[in-house]
Amino acid sequence: MTARRAFVVLIVLIVAIGLGTLLWRVLAPGGGTIPKILMAMAFLGTAPWTGLCVANGVIGFVLLYCSRPPPRPAPRAKEALPATAIALTVRDEDLGGVLPGLQRLLDELGDRFTLFVLSDSRDPTGEADAVAAFRGRIRYRHRAKNTGFKAGNIMDFLDHHAEGFELMLTLDADSCMSADAVLRLIRIMQADPSLAIVQHLTVGRPATSAFPRLFQFGMRAGMRSWATGQAWWQGDEGPYWGHNAIVRIAPFRTHCRLPLLPGGQHILSHDQVEAAVLAGAGWGVRVLPEEDGSYEINPPGLPEFLRRELRWLAGNLQYRHLLSLPGLRPMGRWQLIQAILLFAGTPLYVLFLLGAAWAAATDAVSAFPANAALQLTIAWLGALYAPKLLGYAEIALSPEKRARYGGLMQFAIGVATEIAFTLLLDAISAVAKTQAMLRLAIGSRADWKPQNRTDRGVGWSEAIWLLWPQTMLGVTVFAGFAAAGWTAVLWALPLSGGLLVAIPFCVITAHPRFGRWLRQREVAAIPEEINQRITPSRTRAGAAATLALQTEVEPE
Image (cartoon, rainbow, N blue to C red; front, side, top):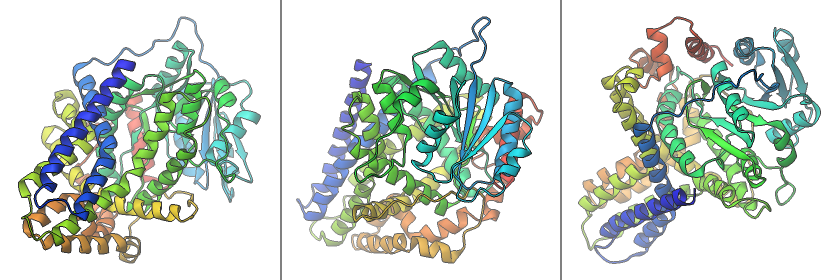
């Protein structure tokens, strides 16, 4: 693995040098100024993450396009399935909407599996009745106090209720897995006793609302290439995302009792820490970068999306206190750093934008370097979105894969729509994350409320209240760009145009009519949706797709 990891570092350095050279061509005319210095500092600060995007994207693309998929583990002769607990963690969820899909899963898996509903709900009214109506093997436990959040919920289960079980399938309330996907993970664990976690790549279920529909279309392409590339150089020291994974109970119970943070606070985002300490103890954590049979529900609109992102941000930034945790291997510490970088660079993008607007408004000496700025923008965005763009390319180059998306033309329409959506979304999201980091810096506590997973419209008043900072910032920076002429404004649109339209973007992408319009035309349709239209027969794979579609239209 050493040579592979050195190769990744080399790619990151090449990308940083290349983008730095392009930036120099933009900033050099007119000499150095304070806003240009701010731009350079912010740009260089984002270079490690941008280079990592290129490395994972390129490696993943090459592996996906040029390699045959590895053979899946076959059952050993006369080897029975281990006793497996399905641990469903819930907090203030409608179990009546969650359990039916698990009923079908248990029926297919057989009697070696038992479902445990691990409730941390503040008001568990109705949960016991929903469990009582369940026909399969199910046990219910409610904690009156959610000490340690989800990690504490899981560990309480392992300490008091997991006797006799060797493995645990971790699921969230919005998780959905096919029996084939679950058994695939178990066979991998049986084939390699050194593994503590096997994490399945998880994709979004078919969605009616425009926001999750567009978001998960791009996320699916990007995560496939990212996870494939990352697995190549991280090996069995990979990440853990906390759900849709098989866990070996004994090492997890022994090693994953998480420490408290300074001040006695519990860790919010537990999963990456658990992966790091298991790897440090000599156990393997493997990501299976396959997307069939493992699903989740994405937020139905921008408000819910931002709340989820800010929860993750608060949790990931806590990892800075754990980098010196004893017993971690270098890759385990890198996993924590990588999780921090996912969010920590966001204020630098905002700083770069502010510096660029400031320079445009005050540099009266030199004309706006339109050609150099265009080259930088294309290269920077291409690098930043490399996993997604190369994931799209890998699908487009395969007749079989693009057919799963409705054909090349249908796929291309989805790609174009999703790219426009992402450019608008990322500018809005960057400002929200920067605001959140500023609040945390002055001592605010993270807000860890239950999630809304049900499609809903967003009213104009809610959108204005949520997004007026983005709108005001957009007006301000574009006034600065306008001072340098229309070429500067055009250059800024891909980077910051979302700020100007943040409020209508929020309302429109949650509007039922827009979602219905996209679905009727199959814009950004994922393979499960296409497959349901073409082959509605209930084969095992078809049943999983049908389940996903049913769950999507039944409120949770």
